[in-house]
Image (cartoon, rainbow, N blue to C red; front, side, top):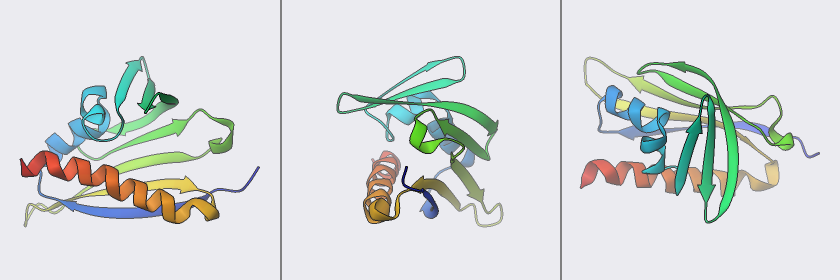
Length: 127
């Protein structure tokens, strides 16, 4: 098994932390930008992209602050994906901070993939 390495990306967004939290913590919210389709059963999230499915367990969640998922595939054992909201109360600015893991050889692709997905999220606020 190829080792996975953590990376973190930060995306400034013009959105309230409450709305952003809904978009990163619910099936309906995640289906608007993260995956083509999202189903939830108890604490398990099932994400579908172009007919391929991947599942993750919601392991921790703090309202208006962050969600942490544990992917269920063997390659990601013990690794968490975190979506965190950084909010500056004085300026009202918010940022989505993504922490995820990937193989070194896929680092550029993974970062581009996150840029694309968060671009879909940003377009929700520009329409």
